[in-house]
Every structure is written in structure tokens, then in C-alpha cells.
Image (tube, rainbow, N blue to C red; front, side, top):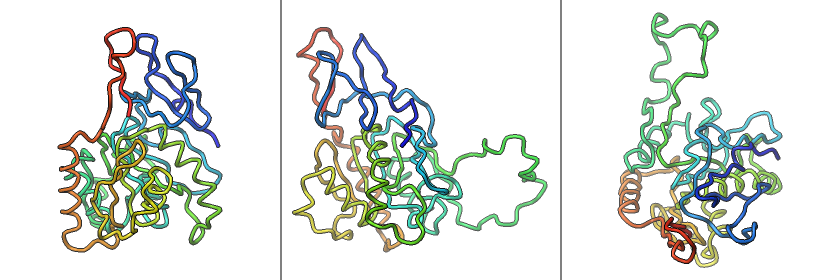
Length: 280
């Protein structure tokens, strides 16, 4: 696995590192140079402004959809794989599916995205050639606007590679390292797993609630669950949304953001200086 050097960058403030990542990257504490366990520091800053694949993940597969979004996100939306949740055409998770405008629109109205292209698939299949230059003659086609404008949110998949059919358990295990590296580098405050598989994985790996939580996505949709350092808010798979599921999610997201969802404590009072040192 290759991890872009941006994932291992530190932002130093008063000689103190304010970010920590795992999975092959060095991390330090103020006192002894090593910070162990599952400590998650607040006030974290990733030193990159890239939104597409900000940590340079390069899995060994011909087609994949890497993480996309704000590298300093408060919210991490987690899907299954491109065969289920799309994204291959634009390289952005959760795009290109019939349900994508409704799902991304709900995230936008709920305050997690700044804006989104809400056009239906195929809406402009026959554009005026005078308004749309030939892609071959486009001097800079990569500057085409992204379909999603993120705001404090990161989007990624458990299995970023496009599988040949349904991924095997071994394939999910192999792709876990990429997902976990992105999750811990982002260190978002809220995890939002989409669908039953992502929800089951997040509850098992990042909370102690899996054994006592019935995986009923109708009941879990938009419900807040306290995890180990993260708040978890499951989302029903948008391909199976009923009338009102988007409104229920929007209301849940707005309600969440009206609370202290970061759940941080300031330990700066225990060390020299006046700067805060936030942990959760």
C-alpha cells in the first residue's frame, strides 16, 4: 500500500504537533515522542487542500473510487463499493446512480455538503455542440467542475476497488487497510455509514455496540449512536429509500449539528502555555 506523503504531514504550533495518523505514518506526543493507543486529538489539521484522493491511495486494481472531500472533515460518509454506490464516472463516491441527486441533495440540505449537481442522470444527453467543446480539443478537461462541493465532509468506501461481482470476505479484508488509513487520517467526529454492510462494519470496528444493536436500517436511519471516539449516525441505503427518508435524514443532520457533536475535552490546562489541546 502506498500512502501519499500529505497523509503523514504535521502542522506544528508552538513546537507541538497537532495531527496524528496511523497505518505507516509517524506520530508523536509532546512528552516522549510516541503516542500510542486509540488517542484521537482535536484541533487537527491535515496539510493538504486536495479533495480528490488527498492521501494518494493506489490499490492494485484497474478501477477504483478513492476518498473524496475535506481532509479536515468533521463528517465521514462511508459506503460499500463502487458497484453498489457508484462513482466510477466522476471519481466521486455516491455519484452516477439514479438515487444520487436525492441522496446528495439530502446531505446538502442537511448541511454536510456546500452544493451538489442535482440534475437527473441523462438530463442533458444531447447538449448544444456550440456550448460544449469537443473533449479532445479541451485544453484542460480536468478543470471540469466536480459534481459535489464538500463542506467539512469526506466520502469514501469500505472497498474502493470495483469488484468483479460481489466482493469476497478476503477482498474486503484486503481493502480494509486503505479504508482504515483514510478514516484515521481524517479523524472525523461523526461516522455516517450508508447501508447495512457499512453500518455493520463501523459498529463492529469502531464501537462496542455491535453485539447489542439490531441491524434494522429502517430503525437505525438517522439515529445517533455513541462509538469509541466517534459518534455514529447510520443511513439507510438510498437505493431503498421510501417517501420521507430524505426528510428524516435532513432533520437528523440538522439536529446533530445543533449539539456539541465533537465531544472534546481541553487538556491544555495540564501543560505549559495558553493554547488549547483538545482530545476526545
